[in-house]
Image (cartoon, rainbow, N blue to C red; front, side, top):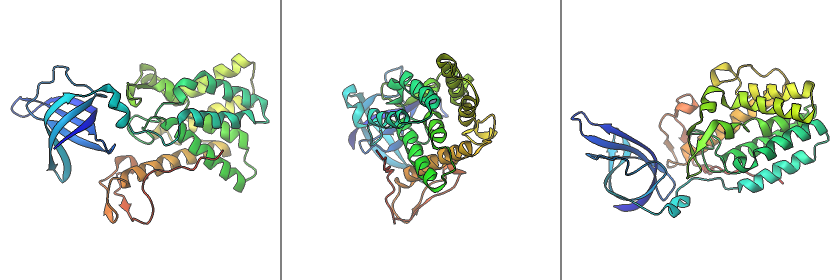
Length: 309
C-alpha cells in the first residue's frame, strides 16, 4: 500500500544482529497514530520528526497491535503538514479573544490588570500552543481549548455554588497553564517537540506563579489576591506526586484543581475510545491509572466542546 504520512517520533536503533533500523510513530491521513518500522535502514539524518513523507508499506501485527512495515520512503512537500497535524476545532485566536473579553468585564480591577497583562504579554504563543507534549490536548491550539473548557465549567460551577468568588476562580483558570509557553518547545508542526531547559528546571507551575508576582510588582499591585493567584497556580496539580509543591488550601483553588483534572481525563478517555469500535476495550492507558476503557457505543467518542460566548 502507498500513502502519505507525517513522522511524529523517530528513533534510530539496532537489531540483535547489529543492523540499523528506524523505530517510528507516524500520523496517517486519518490523523491517527501508527507504530512503524523500517528494517535494515541507515538514516544518516535523511528523515526527521515533523516531516511529511510518501511511503509504501505493509500492515502487520506485533504482539496483537497493528504495525506498519515501511518498504519505501521519500520526502513530501512541507506544505502538507497541516493535513496531518491534529488541531483544536476552535481557532486559538478566537478563543483567546473570548477569554480576554471575560477578563475585561471583571469588576475586580486588580485581577483584571494582572490577568489581562499576562495574557497579552504571551498572546502569540497562547493562541497556537498545545497543552501538553503527549497527553491531554496535545494538539495545535490545545492550550486555549483546555483553558476555555475549564473556564466554561468554572462558570457553571459558580451558578450552582454562588458563594464562590467567580472572578478569582476564572483568573486562576485562565492563568493556571499560561507558563506552558515557557515550558515547552514547538517544532514546525506546531506540536510540542520537547521541553525547554527552563521547563525542565522550573516547570510551568512555578514559572506561572512567578509571572503573577512579577506582573503584580510591575503594576504596583500587592496584597492577598496576588498570593491567592500564585497559590492556585502552584497547587492546581493537586498533590506533590503530580508536581504541586503545595495542595489546594481554599475553595477556588480546590475547584480549579478538580476541574483541571476532570477536563484532562475527559479528553484522554475520548481520545482513547475514539480509536476503537463500539463494544471493544482499549489497551491499558498508563495516563489513566493503567486502566482499560470501554467504548459502550451510546455516545460520540470524538472530543467535542461547547464554548460559550
